[in-house]
Length: 441
Image (cartoon, rainbow, N blue to C red):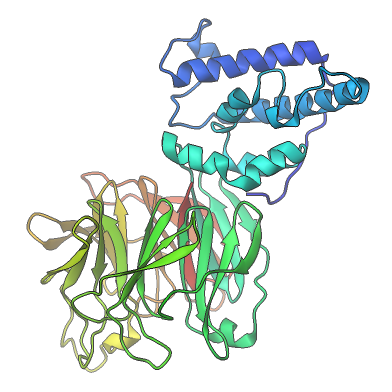
C-alpha cells in the first residue's frame, strides 16, 4: 500500500560498508528461508521462517538499508554514467542482484512498500507491478488488512499487526451510487465495491498497488444483494437481484489477475440477502430470501469446482426465533448471515442474542460457543461486521448511543474454549459499518 510514504534520514556509511551489511543481512534471510542454520548466532539475527514476516527492528533496518543503498547507487550513477560498468536499474540493488533483492523484499511488511516504492523508479515499478504479492502468495506469506466504511463513500484500512489506521482516497461517484445498496469484497490486491448509478449497476475498484480508485469490470449479470466470497486471486458472487428486482440463481467467478468474470452454473434455488464463504476448498452460499417465500431460507448450497455443480444442503442455517412475535423483523429487513471461516471452521455471529456459533460439519448443526463483544450492537444485523482475519475472528462495530461516535475492532483466535475478545483498536468514527472486507496478500 502506498499511503503515507516517508524516509528516515541518516548519515550514510560508505557504499562498500553498506553493501556488505546488506549482503550479510540478505544472506541470513535467504539461508533461513531455505531451512538452513545461519553461520552466526540465530538469537542475534532473530529471523523467522520464510512464511513469517520480519520483526519491527528487522523491517526498519531493511527499509533503511534499501534507502541508503539506493542513494549510494544514485551517487555511483552520477560518477560512472559514462562507464560500461554502470549497473542496470533492473537489478534494484546492484550489489546483490535483482533476484536476491526481490527475495528480501518479500519478507518486508506490505506496510513498508509505500516507503520502498518511493526510493526510485525501479522499486516503484516493482511494487506497482504486483510481482511481490504474487510471489508472496506462492510462498505462503500473507498479511491481512481490514477495509471498512462507516461513512458513505469513505473507506478506512486497519493493519492489525501494527495497529495502524489508514484513510483511503475518496471515491468519486454520483449521489445515486452513494445512496444505493452496496456490496464489497476483497480479492487479490483489489477492493471491489458494487453499487448502482442512475441507469446501471457499477463496480468501483481500489488497488493497493496504486492507492487509487478506478472503474472495475462489470459482472456478466448486473446484481445487488448477493452473497460472495474470495480465495486468493479469485472470488465468487452468487444470487442477488437484477435491476428489475428479480431474484437470481446465477453465479460468476472473478479472476483479479485477468480482471475478467466467468459465468458459472446456476444454483438450485434463487436467493438474495445471502452470504458466501469458502470452506473445505468449496464455495458455500447460505441463507437468504427466495422467490415467493417471506421466510429466511434454511438450506445452503455448495459449489464443487471439479464437478462444476451445486449441491443443496438442507437445514444448513436454521432460522431461530421463527414465530417469535409481531415485533420480529421480516426476513427482507434482516442482514444476511454474519459468517466467517477460520482454520477451515465456520463461525457465525447470531446478533439477536449476541452469540457466537460454530458449525459442526459432521452433524450439520450449529453450537453456541460464547458471546460477541459488548459493543457489538446492530440493527437486525446491519451495521456490524463479522469477518475472518487470518487465524482470527474479528468483530467491528460501535455503540448505538448518540454520544457513542466510535468504532472498535475486537479479535479472538478460536480455541476450544469460549471467545475471549481482544481489543485491537478504537477510533472516533461513525459506529455503523456499511461495508467491510478483509484483504490477505
